[in-house]
Amino acid sequence: MDRFLFVAFAAVLVSSPAGAQQDSVARGERNFRVCAACHSLEPDRNMTGPSLANLWGRKAASLPSFDRYSDALKASGIIWDDRSLDAWLTDPARMVPDNEMPFEGIDDSRVRADLLAFLKEATKPGAAPERTAENRMNGGGMMGGMMSGGRAPNLKNLNPAQRVTGMTHCRDTYRVTTADGKTRPFWERNLRLKTDSSEDGPQSGAPAIVSAGMMGDRADVIFAAPNEISKTIEDHC
Ligand code: HEC
Image (cartoon, rainbow, N blue to C red; front, top):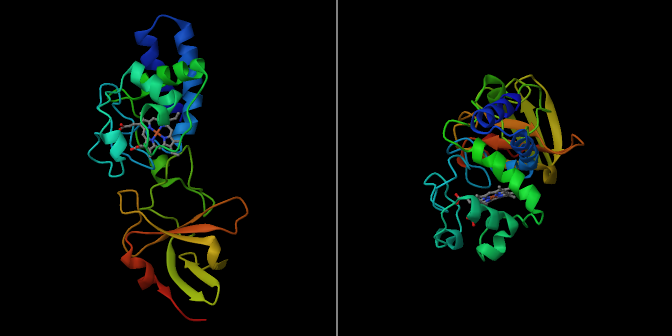
């Protein structure tokens, strides 16, 4: 994140003499946290929403790597620029009725202006933060949570506490065994079974367990593909 800020700042320092502009970018970077839950700034890194890399001049709903655009956004004919983005962020549903971005809009024009000042720098070609080893691993045990700065951790290189070696289901309980030799029980409604087939997903045959929620009683088990789910879980007590 620090590096990211630095890149955004460096870009502004060259392009703008005014300190006020830098303040605006810094505030916009903070405002972007709301968006970061759904949007990455790295090219083709899609989450709930499409990557915002190289946004200016892009046609709406045109990213080939994003499979979940609404028909409404596809048919909108919008080209993203200062004006269209300001209207979109003011009230997405008004600008494109039936779009599927779950976001109400931002009333305050100052807040929008800051956000756009930041986005304009951060979405320029080459501005995206590099994927460091730290980003990829997101170390720690199971508590290395899902949402570090809005990005999902890479699950290819798991530590033993995160690598699932076996799972059973008995009555209302899953028991999850990990490569460190521990077995933990979960009420079945507290364990989510997910897949991640992207390059960030786990290796085939090595599902990951990631803690979810604050109490330690909930977790996600993430598989490389749907067909691994029932193969992994043995139904016995
Ligand atoms: C809860 C998830 C979510 C949040 C929060 C969110 N978005 Fe989105 N966003 C989406 C989805 C989903 C779409 C695709 C909508 C569609 O196809 O109708 C989208 C689409 C977009 C697009 C159009 C991209 C394209 O390729 O045409 C832009 C620009 C955008 N969002 C910017 C933002 C900004 C800036 C914020 C923060 C103020 C934000 N979004 C907050 C989920 C989200």
